[in-house]
Structures are given as C-alpha cells and as structure tokens.
Length: 251
Image (tube, one colour):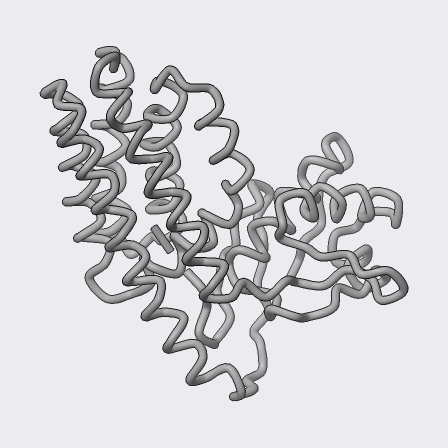
C-alpha cells in the first residue's frame, strides 16, 4: 500500500491517509503500528508520524501504550452499543430542534446528499455512501442550534464513521438507510419535531442492529488468517482497494 503524501501538507495528509486506512480495515484491531515501517509507507519523518498518531489517538482510532508504541484499538460490541445509545439521544434531539429552524439552503443540501447517496449505493461505492451521509448529518447538526450536541458528536466522528462502514456492509442495509434518512428529512421539511426525533432515533436503532450483525460475523472469522493485498491510498487519502477479509464497514 502506497501511503506517501506530498510535502506541502504532510501533517494533514498523514492524518487523513492513516485515518482512512484504519477505518477501511487495512490494519487489524489490536495490530501494532511499527514506526519505521509507517514512516517508510507514508514517506514522512518520525516527528511527523508521531504528531499524526497523537491526532488519531485523540479520535480514539489509535492507542499509544508506553514502552509498546501505537496500536489499533479493539472496538467492542459493548463500546459500540454505548456509542449508539449516545447517538440516539443526541441525534434525536438535534433532529427535533432542526425541524423548527431548518433553512431552505440546508434542506437543499440534504436533498442533494441523499440523491448522491443513492447514486453511490447503485455504484457499490461505500466511500461515497459514507461521505454523503456525513454531509447530510453535517447540515442537521450544524443547523440544530445546539452547539454542545454538535461538539459532543464531533468527538465521536471517526468512530461513528467506522460503525457506519460496519452497518452498511450488510446486504440491503444502504437501501434501508436511504429510506430512513429520507423519513428524517420529510419530517424536518414538514416542521414536525416529534416525527423528526422518532425517525432519527429509529434510524440509529436499525443501524445498531446491522452493525451488531457485522460484529457477529466478524467474530466468527476473526481467527482466520488471510494474506493482505496491496492497497493504494490516493492523493485524496481514499483507499483504492480493500483487504480480502471481513472488513469492518457502518451507518
């Protein structure tokens, strides 16, 4: 996998490339990241790598253990359930608030995001599905009028993205997710706060169910060792291919 980044924005690209590689499943949960190897793959110095790893540690995508170095953390089903509980509470409230104050511009962006989501689903583009979902929720959270909700969920962004890739890896889940997000938007357009809250909470609960199934499947194959293929990360940081194993993907 070629993780090299251009010199102009070494720090940001190193963080972005590593983040997307971790989320895409390139590295195994519990795997140690060897500094010398990572520096060679990224084409950066040790200080730059360590800064990038500290940024990812703040996002809980990396754990730095004294005298052992950086590792990929293992997200347990218990921790995932706790994240879904928080999402249900905060996103439900955010949707209810947003329904009373959504601007025409925000609604237009959300409509485009959902249309693009459907195109990504038709093309089997998981990265596109995750990105358009992010754009949809960015409008909802930034426009809900409660900065604390937005700030709290922003600290979970990377782990939420990881879980989105998990749940949307389940057959037919993306199509269901589209219908659920459209239900949220329909309630928002109607100005119905309670319907928006219920739709947002329902969406999170169904995503949890799909992610739980993905965890169950992964548990069944986690002892099987398979060789990895080389995976290139483009200049935009996107993984160009996936590893041949049960890749963690979610909404």
